Image 1 (cartoon, rainbow, N blue to C red):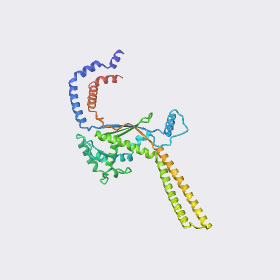
Image 2 (spheres, rainbow, N blue to C red):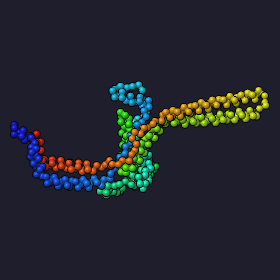
Image 3 (cartoon, helix red, strand yellow):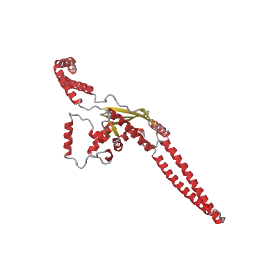
Length: 355
């Protein structure tokens, strides 16, 4: 029995002795892994991340929706509900839609030294830094795929020519690459929106982070005020129409009074009264529509959400990645663990075999 227990125990002293005897192998391994890790990681282009923090305005409807959401987490249901279909938790999905990304790709960017001015789509297509180590393999892969792909499906050439409904494979990859550069996070407790943008150029990353923020604000404002803007346009048309009708009635009344200034016939007086009443009705209609127009403008202003920028876009100083030293250290640790397991596999297998 004691003999069996002894077999089941791992002899760490023996393992340490085995590894120490192979120290020369580890030194050779570390040199090789260090060189290969440096060759792999150092050609990788550096990228920079810029973050923007927004705090959306909380309306009474938003507060009611938040209370309903909180109550639902406890299995309760409040009477009111938020009628807003696009609430902050859906903003990340909105930012990943093709329509939104294509609008962002139209953003005009300029490098810090003003040596390049173009739209972001062209910048992604023609001005991205490549990894010289892997680029030949990428080019070979692209060339191989062109042999079997549809040659008619070409490049849009500009973001305005992109069709979100039907993208070529090349443009799809560009749009997908742009999606990966944008990260949106919404804090459910505070509703603070964090938008980050990653790019190889620190100056452009700040420009694009600010552009994504502005595009999001414009979309939300347009969505929230859609019905109110339709009402304003509707009452403006009615106000213009009733004003024209009123002006015509004034002209008719004025012409009749000028033509029948000295006439005392009852028919003329009746006609004058009829025109005067019609003019008054037109005036009342115009006044009512003007009042409705002003009220709809006030409602539009009330519906327009406000965003407070908590953290503005700032050009990052330090790169966000790749973490070269961390990568090299991780490869050294990983190779050491794998080699140690391999060298002591016999000792470890004894325990598993005994079980």
